[in-house]
Amino acid sequence: MKAVMVMFDSLNRHYLSSYGNDWTITPNFKRLSEKTVTFDNFFIGSMPCMPARREIHTGRYNFLHKSWSPLDPFDVSMPELLKQNNIHTHLVTDHFHYWEDGGATYHNRFSTYEFIRGDQGDLWKGIVDTPEDFEYNQEFAPNYDMVKQDHINRKYMKDEKDHYHVRAFDAGIEFMKTNMESDNWYLQLEYFDPHEPFFAPESYHKLYDDIFPEDVYDQLPYCHRTKDNTKYMTKIQKAYAATLTMCDTYLGKVLDLFDEYNMWEDTMLIVNTDHGLLLGEKEYYGKSHYNVYNEMANTPFFIWDPRCKEQGVRRESLAQTTDIAPTLLEYFNVEKPKEMLGTSLKDVVEKDQKIHDAVLFGYHGKSVNITDGKHVYMRHPEEGNQPLYSYGLNFGHIKRMFNIEELKTMDRQLFEGFNFTKGVPVIKIPVTHRFDPKGYDNLLFDLENDPYQEKPIIDKEVEEDLKEKMIELMEENDAPVEQYERLGLVRK
Image (tube, rainbow, N blue to C red; front, side, top):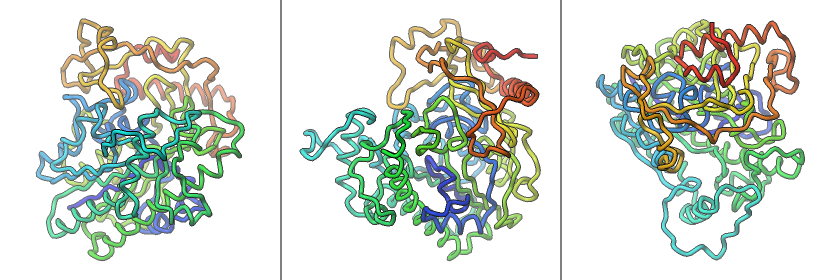
């Protein structure tokens, strides 16, 4: 048996033809939907990039215990379990967070891996002097160094064949062709696109009558709320669509390979994303917002299972990122460890069997959110957003390790651990830089009557039911006791 997972970053499903969009150019996502099973109620677990990837490895929530971080020594890793059971696992990725401090332990869980350099602010090409043509608009942009590095990196990708997305695709295709006659392998082909800064060759932008953006940071009011949507929205949405069409083009080439070599007979195919992205919806851009709306949380998901051969159908049952690891383990006949709380999607694929009554999702230190497929309930922390801690043995921010002052605040006594740390005590570090919940209310949405979450409702009975389910799922996931206090929840 073989398996391929093609993973994108920041896919907003409302921009895909397979989810009803009629203006973006995504014929291969439509083709993918015709070849596979399409999920309509697939949700994230933890936001954003590396927390989602920890869930893909471990099959359990990350966001209740810590934020962005490396894997911990006690973490069960799906690629490593496959490797230990003689399944060759190979990672091809242009996602540069893997080689920063906050993602440093993930890639070595695979049998082999290949990094493709150059996206966003990847510290790739060393140019000492600032390029004369570099301009910096600091109104909405991220840090100066990252924007400058991105500007430098682009100078080495003038042609489409040099683009990091294309080089990642080439490396993934090379692995598949090289090992086509071999058995027992898993390829995780990961793209940074269509993540901002929406860098695609000019030909893709012209498809949307779009001016090729030299630096989309100048247009993206990231994480800012703006009522003047018209100033940014059209430009940003076109730039996103152009990058998405490039993704679609190379996805089509993967499907071509499946057709050419009849890989549909013996190869599972999963196409997914880590999370979505707001592109002006609800007056927001980006993803790091307090309210985790469905543009970020309800993500596209496609799967082909060669054992049951279901294709061109849709599934309504709830599923989420934590179910990916159990699905791959079950497919390769590897026993799921007890620490892994996700569920294999096999029965959902075959007969749309219900596997979850409800699922949680969110960011560490923000709201805890729950959906049962009919409603979404966002439970915000109470004033002060405390107490709050990070737990683990490996800590890292996105681009740096924890500093000395942060480490000095850790409890001198190791915390006895949780039911997934295998009896290993862990470090407990107070979190004081989390988000201020002031001005944010708990929200309840009726997804059947308000799928775009435009009008929160008040329904005490539904809210109480979801609150009880939230507590049950938090207990099942061995959430730290202070999480209940932070959220104003009372355990049974």
